[in-house]
Image (cartoon, rainbow, N blue to C red; front, side):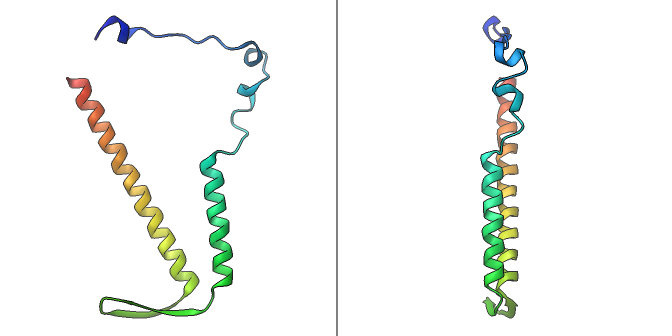
Length: 105
């Protein structure tokens, strides 16, 4: 490890942050973009569920079954969210393994 990698810098607070005002004081009060997108998606899904209550027949390979369209939509949304979450976990795992390998070199 070189000295430039080991050096750490200490940040000094701005005057407005030190006085209790400014952007630092309300950092937890705003909505993040991810939260806004999640709430918007959930709202759109709720509207779709309310408008699509008829039954549909689904056929997959040799299975065929009849479900309400809203139930099928919610099931597909949940499965999609689980796949998205699983891909994120795999990505984090690969990055962690790569960081550990880089530290050993």
